[in-house]
Amino acid sequence: MGSIAPARKKPDSRYIFNVLSLLREHRRFFLWTTLAALALRLAFLLYCPTVTDDSRVYLDLANNWLRHGIYGQTELGQIVPSDTRLPGYPAFLAACFAIFGASHIRAIFIVQILLDAGTCLIIADLARRVAGPRAASVAFLLAAVCPFTANYAVAVLTETVEIFFTALALDCAAAALACRNDSQAGSPNCRKWWASTGASIAACILVRPDGGILLAALALYLAVVMAKDWRARKHLTSTVLAATVVFIFALAPLAPWTFRNFRTLHHFQPLAPRYATDSDEVVPRGFNRWAKTWIADYASVEEIYWNVPGDKIDEEKLPARALDAAKEPTLAVIADYNQTQQLTPQLDARFAALAERNIHAHPIRFYAGLPALRIADMWLRPRTELLPADARWWEFNDDARWSALAVGLGALNLLYVGTALLALLRRRSDIRYVGLLAAFVVLRSAFLGTLENPEPRYTLECYPVIIVLAAVLLAGRSGRVSGEPDTGQPK
View 1: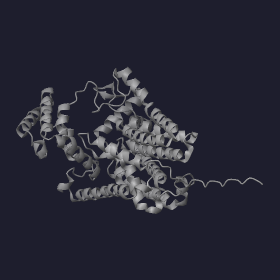
View 2: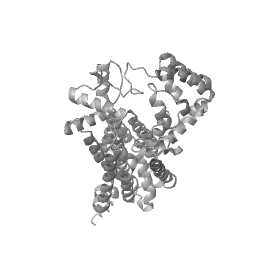
View 3: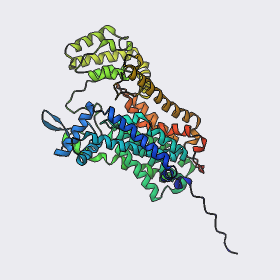
View 4: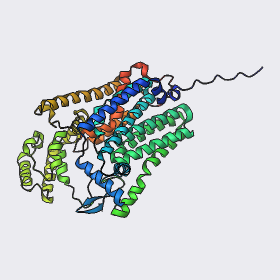
């Protein structure tokens, strides 16, 4: 009797139905959506390109690096080596200058627009991996028309590049986890995905130091996976190897930067200083700690925090909580500061004493209430910080057009975030690797709550996750991955 050949296993639809086949099948949809994405970003380029004080620092670093081979800032006509900013974004700018010329700022915007359009495709692929093809199409649409990320594509700031590599790292991690769950954990293809994940995280870190939060989220997720592997007695070795590969590829690129700082600046600095200051620059830690005892919204950052030292503190702009523990001493310190607008060590020490007084009077507010309010403000503001709209949009003292725009953008942001939250509450079982996505958002939000300067742009790195989760809910149940094996792994 001849042997009976075993039935061939049906190929996994995740590998057949990739994002390229999705593009071919819905050619018109992706074409028109891509054109809409480009039109939106070009409109921002036409009406509100942005160069900030931070932008000038990045541009100066890039120019000095490219022209003189020195990674430093220009001070009094001399180039002084610096470690105040990580080299990732200046390297991007220097590459643009090398190709298009140092004076072509608009070329940077065009490159960032194209990069942001590419991010939309990566987000779609991430949605495909975690929820299926229909969710991918919806995610591409949501990413393409998102004004919050589009706005930063025409700003000389790190956000567009950071969001690109964040989405890429999450997409590679999802591919690696899918490979692992399909019992291919030791295959060369799987190892390549883990290496790509680590390299993408390295790019995140080299652009912004808080890019390391993504590495922490992945480490937390893999720790849970390893705990389940240990109990199930399978995949443990391959998971440990995967974590090792990710960490090596994520952290190894920091070695040259750390060595350069030690050799050139004579101190150990693997990332960048907490307040982006040079080693000989005095940090007003007392004032910063005092500000942290009452700041809860971006308006206070723009009106007071950024202006000190150098400008007067308008006591009328202070919220009541800044004065409720020690009103007269606080006003006295502010009056003394306003005479010179300089933070002397003596004045900074007085602000530090005020901070300790406020913390002692309201410890729960300082350690829990204010961080929660700062997180909420960064997530729920209208995100008009790059537009002429008033930071105090809720007072409606601005031009009617800008007030209406602020309300509209606030409602749209709430729609994105609210839809993503509903997806977590109602459709969690339909989302693969939801634990990784949620861990990243939660860890990053918790970190941002510790900052005294709640800037809404700091949450934009989470927007690839927000868009993917929102797409899952809007796509409906037909968007879930078909043929998903029950691996027993954490979601």
